[in-house]
Length: 222
Image 1: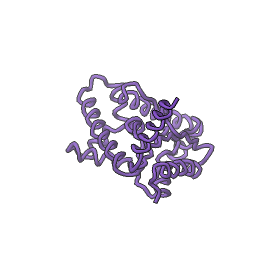
Image 2: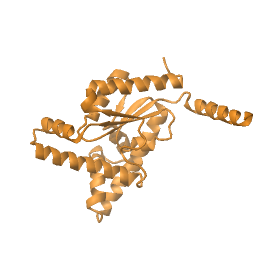
Image 3: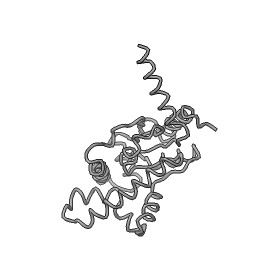
Image 4: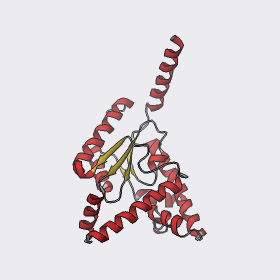
């Protein structure tokens, strides 16, 4: 019994040592139309930590020597579409794969060096072994997401539903391709917030509370 207790205490001590001093990183996966980006911006303002979304493209382009416009053309949606619909376009697949490799390293570097919020791009999967990582999924029922997208873009209901389905599928295919089928958007989440039920402000409240609790646990409170 004493040996088991000692082993448990040693494991807990090792986990605490690993967490100590490491930044707390929030990753946000977003069902299309659930306003995950808007919630990420509000959360960044509330917590006073940077939000990385398009900035990931800039940093990835810097690593690869490609232009930002060129890299942006092969971001999440396009990479998934090439994989799904254009398997013969080897040049496109090669470029999107290189983008993902560069972006992966940017995400890993950010996760190891500063407290921040990272949106999409499989960041939850890439940082899954980070002990101070909080994985969030922002979601909402399909009809609510259609209404949000329709209202923002001036579409009718049929057009809005078509766009939500297409973009959601692209995001899910991106996860499937670059995790080699090991990870889905809903996998490994610490927090799932329903935008339709909580509103944007309510979602921010929930995620911010988790962030502050993790800061306390990691001994990083100011």
